[in-house]
Image 1 (cartoon, rainbow, N blue to C red):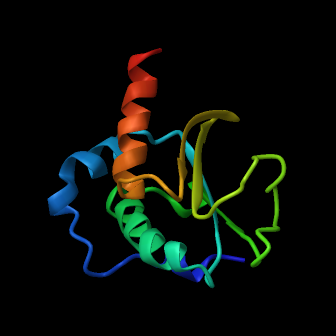
Image 2: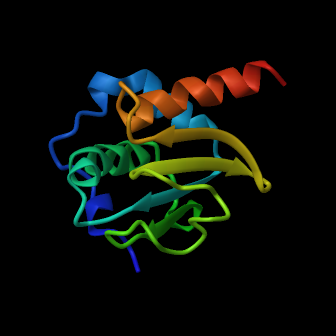
Image 3: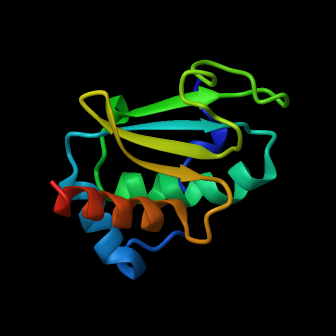
Length: 124
């Protein structure tokens, strides 16, 4: 079941975030795994902008996986991925975790992950 909060924010500006969008576009072989809840205030405030960034970067829907959780933060793969807070976004390539955003970060999800992906690529 898709997260309604992953509907792209129609007023998010790709032009204002060109570097972030370009970085996300370059990583065309990763999968975004998103844990959240439509009932969650942090998810409602953060995920629509992230969805808009993924959309602007032309990330195909088959590389975006939704993992809705209930108010007890129970759901698919919660234990396997050690999910405690939502939203949490894990970026993987071939089953290997490259980056992880957890709710309390001080940057927007897309900006945070773009920086981490660039760092991960630089260290390879």
